[in-house]
Image (cartoon, rainbow, N blue to C red; front, top):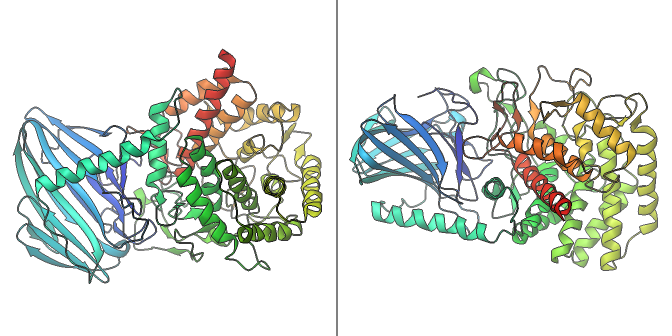
Length: 604
């Protein structure tokens, strides 16, 4: 068992309220419950000795391994092959579609042999509350219970278990055609224990889960050139969305490093206004109007949460809309391969990032095409925010990348303030809503004039990261997508050239150069996968189809073995950062759609 497998050596399973990572070695080394942003139960990825894990794999350490998803589902299959036999572990969680938050979540692990004979061993070693809480073991025939403060994990197994301290282990030898299972249900400590699981009932639930995902995916309207990758990205976005509220999390994990051994380790299990807003367009492009609508409703509720005399929106929230995300260091955890500190919560939640207003209005505006019309009370909240923004946009902020090097006049933040006024004016006109359109128009035009005057560098012949500087920034790749500049505007084409020269490395794109623009953190980072897909999108819009398609195809080769992406790509092609990341997958979808449309026009 690899103490710290590569970040990319995992698949994701989930039930639409939480999720788990399963390594190619058959180890669940990350699992939280009852929500994405709840304390961990297994967190061996952050500390092999203290974090806890759930292993189910053959005894033979020399067997080869392959991992895949059952077609068009979130059912993960890990295959183990040896001269003596071939076995499989199928991991999945039954989707919870009621729309009601629950504290009961079940991880199914079915083991079967398809050829010869395989002896499997199992270890279940939960460590509640990020390894800070102890538990008591209750061992019984056919199962065990792990009781901690407030939570209990009920394990049911189709083979004998034995005590190993306060944990359990067991073995089972299966011959061709034989099946067994281990089922872990986590629930409130005072909740009823689940009924024992038999093989027949587990198999029935497996096919129910598979049917759910395949039926959902069949509603997709995508018929383009990259169906496999787009479909996997769609399923991943769905897996990362907290169904009771419709709020997507940025990633399933926390603390996975942008640089192994460094300090750039963040908690991404929350809902960013920016990420969720940009996912609306990706979901609509695939025909998933219900999911897009759910997020816009969640977003509309947030518009009325905050005191308008402070800031109208926070940049991120918990999945239930709670804004309190105080950051603390989990000093008892060693971190992934020594990458520490391990941070719980996210101090960036208190930052000023003015671009979120543009992304919020962008989401509401994009949603109007499928009837996501804001009611009168909802519109009053939108109007109130824009009235406030008209007097509040011209301020330095921390910017989209959440740097900790001080506030600046970030160009991208101003561009998105322009987008907020632009989309607000469009909505007011489209739905004949009352609004101070004269003031919004003045603010919109003032932002544009300021960006044109101060966001352009004569030296670089490009739009730059912040006023008064010469640093390039890949966030500006969104300028043509939101309509701030035409895709073939001469200044924009020059900016694309400058980005290629400065930020592109073998078709991969950096966010910015921390050496040229210090961000208050030590160390470096890899190329940012979101930015690579944004660059593809911008190239396609500019008519540069040959390099756009080549870069897109090349970027797809960096996906892991089951089609998932983390946040970044390291210098040797390894995946870095939290995993899988929603931002990367939604930008893959939008880039694929833009490329498809451009290539179709070229063919016609």
